[in-house]
Length: 503
Image 1 (cartoon, rainbow, N blue to C red):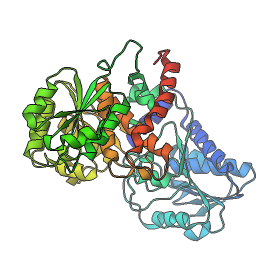
Image 2: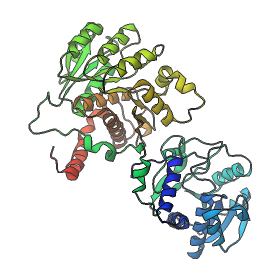
Image 3: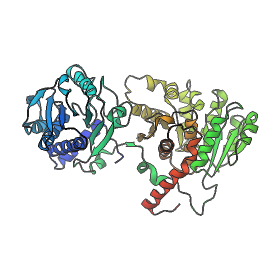
């Protein structure tokens, strides 16, 4: 269940399910039951349900009724008037036989568990007045907080806090998650997310055709390159990594190790002559070749056995690097551009996009962090009409013609055709010097083996985060490549079980 549905797509899923013969009130009953089941998993007998006047509140009414039937002491606090509730929410409210109290912040003081059923994922305006006061009261209560669908105050499509938002311990969502469950800051408000089947058939996805996914092996596993018994190093591809000068060789070497561990059959560092001795002395399986400037790089990449190239880590911003980038884009190799290779085009983004769009379908991947993204895509970053990281990455991919990996704790991988993947497995200790260089090299390692650009980038982001998660605190960039063999063993076993192929 890796599909992520925007607010509009989730509304369409509901509509299609109802049009297919499933009663809306039955969907609401199932949603409320899932919330009640979640509440029942935690200690405490005094439950406060804080409901809004819409369908989210209707789910809350159902949960309140079912919990009361199970013997819980339930108080239902309504923000608004029951008489003004409509549709399925009105039906759910009519089935509640207990008291309906006016929502007041002080009423939550003695609750063991608070069910947040104020607003769902579709909130699109800032929370104000009594609703904001209730959100503050929920956050201040000494209670375990269970949010219905999404913590109130979080936009389901963007993950944005709409003025104020509930800080939940658990969130129960329905059918599929929304981007706001994974994008920051929304993810930080969700606590543990439980996905409940409420009766919407998966076939509605064939009509909706979502383009946003949670980044997990199910998204890209079928295209992951498996080593073959008849293969050799050249069939596994040759990755070239550009190095910085003598004082900045570490970034390139980290990228090279990432590419080699990711599975590239050969890896060569394209080294300035001034740094040749340093790079040669510091590497064993990684080869080193003297390359100064765009012409010599073009000569190296003219060898059709070179299947991917990384430029930018430790390279230094300047005209020489920009020329090397354009030379790489003119080659047949897949290209990964990181760090200085992105910043170098801050004043000429159209020149970079032009070079990318001339590549006739050959993969190009850009891997900016937020600062580099803001420099290269300044118009997108400064636009008041762009409200989420997902939107920014998508627009940048469309504008540039490249796969864009907008890095962070919620890294987004976006393709020019609109497909996007959001990661949620990156631990805090991944924020360490050189980890981005390793990421760029790993992407090149998968591209070198022929994996398509979007899938290679998404797979690398997941593997990168998973390696850091398994290592734990104290991680440094050098540790990441050496964790890949263990991850690959598990991944290969899953692929073999799924397809019958053998590595």
